[in-house]
Image (cartoon, rainbow, N blue to C red; front, side):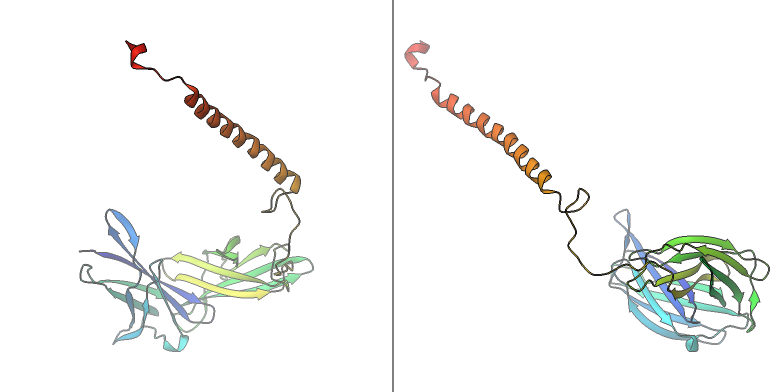
Length: 265
């Protein structure tokens, strides 16, 4: 029987919603493999009930992600959110589940532009009691969104007011209008889990997204003509020598005199 390992994490977003992310893996033939095509059922557990939130099928990376709107969230008496996910597979796999409990918090991002200096002020607050309470001495990071993975710009530790400031370079490439998407993150916190908020600012260098023919160059997929011609000549000379050698070997073999039985005697 395959015994799955299920990890459940919660990502509290800037719009007060929560992303639930289940990661489903199992050890098969001695290797940890990602399990895809399995139904993951998400639940919210409160002091008095267990409410189904939705079902998501795991993708090829073994991920199942469900967004929970702020209106669906119910906080327990101690100010925590408690979530659970269950996964049932085929007959040769045991059922598995994962749980996570986090306190409600929010990461607030305030872009600041003074002359040519760009920075972002981040504020981490605990909202588990209904009021905003600053969270000090906590590391928060600032990233810029890229095609594959966000690129880290910097990190700061919150002060007694829950605030930290991170500078932003003014030469980051953006979209055709010069827009960049900034991401503020709190990762793997024992109390609050994961937090994330985003903001789009016109702080980047405009980069065209039009596909244009580039000139021939050494670093491109279209090398200069002189290099291409030289390569063809050299390869023709090398293979030409191989062909001549093989031809001469066959010719010598045909010209070799036959040895008769009489001569052998």
